[in-house]
Length: 156
Image (cartoon, helix red, strand yellow):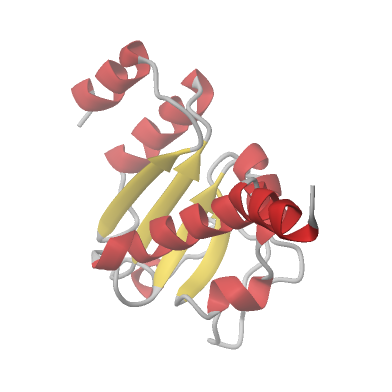
């Protein structure tokens, strides 16, 4: 096997690049999610994202804030009126207690990237019942079982 065969195989099997491209597509929404947005993740998708993208790469795609849908314990907010970013990708949370002026983000779109689990669907249903954002673009890291899809559809 010569080096050109090795390079071809490594390009075809580059999992990190594949995931990076998928993350880029979901953040941009293939052109449907223009402008500043919030990225809502769970614990697993936070780890996936942190392995394939830097915070500056995420920010360059007009992501105003990265937040955890499943973490209600964090309380970091920016008191200076600037963009909310953190050195730890999973340390920010947009809750009414932490952000009393929810109008700061109500005009923004949310891109949700979650594992397709019953807990995450429950959290998503709760989020959609009291929406904080103007639009929700929902993506899963795996196949969503029909029972969870039905649960999500029935609560809409």
